[in-house]
Length: 507
Image (cartoon, rainbow, N blue to C red; front, side, top):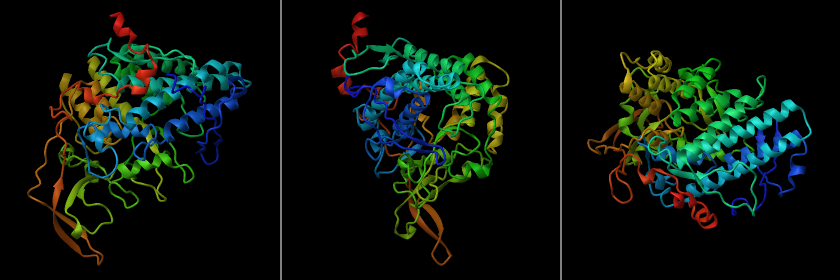
């Protein structure tokens, strides 16, 4: 880990402007820990700076912070069809992660620098000047953010925990590191999940019950419960996943209306959002992701995250989510001059001014976690929980399902509800499924109807576009548990950390 930690704490001190919710990402030089954590206000700046670093750091234009991992997750799934324009095309073709490309390196550096910053907070906060309530809250948020990063590492660098609980994953660090720190060996996937869940449970104990956050990017009790629900589901601890999601849904159970759903998934004030990353005109780097996600407005540029045409057939006609999935050309272009038509999903839209908040957790996900955990436990109300979400979306409720049929229905609902939010590949890996892509016929052409400049309806025949990558880079077929699904440890880490694979030698 020497290269990652060569600048000491790397705390990235920032100022947080409460009124505008603006995060300033300009780093200072590293200074002594006693000075950095002199007061709880200083420690809060470390939290804010670390969060901003995690979410706003660019590697390339296709890699806007942690959101790049979410976008890669969907680009490597079954339901997103990428065009040939800039961004995530190598992920769509499964060559990015296995080849240790930019997103792969960014993932590693963002995770471990954030972990190191949180280790520093946890170690030093007790000595800071400030109230015990503030110390408890800051320590809780540090544990939660560290647990969140270990959850990302556990679910991205190894296969499902039940495939091989003892498979080596990534190193675990719980103390601040510097250029003299000796690299730790890779821990097993089980150990990394234990670390993640342990951190989050520690956060749950410490977070003050009455803490009122000033912005939804800050971690409160509801966010911790949501992360615990997610982490324990991935770790296949069904009872804890049920318990934590039950606790969260007792207070956070609002499901957005059709109008809210169609508003663009761009506003952190949405009542269904539990956690997200705000953007302003002065701080909007993470908004760049919407150039990939937004395929229906002229504010966007790449229009790359289109849908598999077969994806639309998964929805009931009464489901209002189906109404925002339609054939269309690039917005703002003259259809008469276009050759192709894509299946567009009008879920993500820029706000005026070219900014958009980033969603990280919604109540809908908690309904799905709760339903899956209860289905795994054989509890009778699992179907009821699933149907609450389906009813809210105008879909036909499921009847008479149990066992694997019910679990399959929940997995399908996750695909429909969470499209574009960064869960596709994680779900495929944790459920030991395979990517499924089927060729869509380019004939007959699609009769695309639009309104011309004079307000008259016009129809033009265009070639429909579906999936274009159907095999892995070595030309083998898609299969479960493929090496191409996993992030890989960067070469620099393998060279610097001579103890990385020492556990293998002990076996």
